[in-house]
Length: 577
Image (cartoon, rainbow, N blue to C red; front, side, top):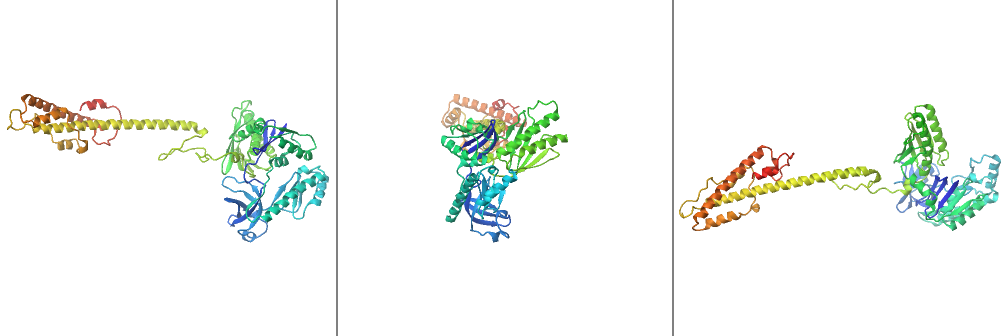
């Protein structure tokens, strides 16, 4: 059973057969095919043989030189600032504006009135000569001299009263367009086919439709009024809630399937449809097709099923331009011919009349189809703000890394997250090693500075109970701080990093300033001096040995390189100091 589903609220209509969509009728563009505008000529471009006209603020239209009446150069046929009456023949796509034509065509149920010629044309599907002569004679009585008329297929068998009524409706529209254009003085819309219900019934309704589904009772009554004069049989008209109309009739499910890049075949195979700027590529895969006994039969049946589904998908998605089909390789010539016959037969029902090329040696088929408006993806799709429509997000160092929310890149997103976690752990490890290394160097420098000050202070002290005697001499001579710095190849520490003496050093300084130190205190001071010099010599020997074994993290430079291995035990090396 065939259903015609019309949703005036969503401006979506679909012709359904047994739950599958045959054709979609969608009007969501501001500039639709058939709209009539008053325009101003802006730029004449002889280099590309075209003229650009201004339709509205910020919107330009494209007018080809072949569509402009007259002969000679473009500058002689048109001039900048000239006002024209044009009709949109191609909706805007991408960055391209709409294409316009100065020839106006107004369709009706049985007639199409046009300004492009002044003749009468009859549909080729009306094959009986007697009927063609009858329709021509009736039309001659009504046709004005300045207009041409095309008799549609639906006019066959209609009475003279029905034909006259349809022609008068078109004639009234044409007079309104001319009057409004004469009153206008700049660019503006003149006529829009705003009655979506009427336009769908006019273009899509035929004798094969069994039921019409609409969104409210008012649309049901209007549809029944139209069908009284258009159909000689009873047609079921059903009113369904507009909010549930598309879902209950499976139109929404078919729309979502056509917006996907994958379409499944009946026996387990599938096709992948990928649209690009220059062409549309279609790939065929056998998938889970296992019902055949031989490989040749599997390939042939998969390609035949794909040919039928490809013709349907091209029509539903309204794909235009160059289309490349990659069939599964077929070695037998008879199989190639059979697949191409199925494809050409399925393409015959397309109103756009696509041209099918020959099958190449690589099993590639070329199809060219005229662009009649926006594709289904352009109508319902918006360019992704993250990937700019490419479908891939590239993460480069040196800048902010964008978030990857594309559903097809979750695996790559997880891999990137794992890599980023590893990099963060490595950075944390390096920072911890640098911090520990700096702390070790600072502690070692602080001990050396304290030893230097203790040595200088003790060298200036005198022995106990001998006020006039020479200063007390330690068992080891005091080492000059400048000599120690030269020995360890490091610069003297800034004064801001000086660490004050600890509690024993402060006690020794008080003892030196005292006038008469006691014998016990002098003995303790000498013992401390001997221990400090012994520790200092041991530290110097240990540091020299650690450098000879490649412990580069003991070098006194604050920006020393990190160790490449963990073979050296830092704790043991530090304890030597």
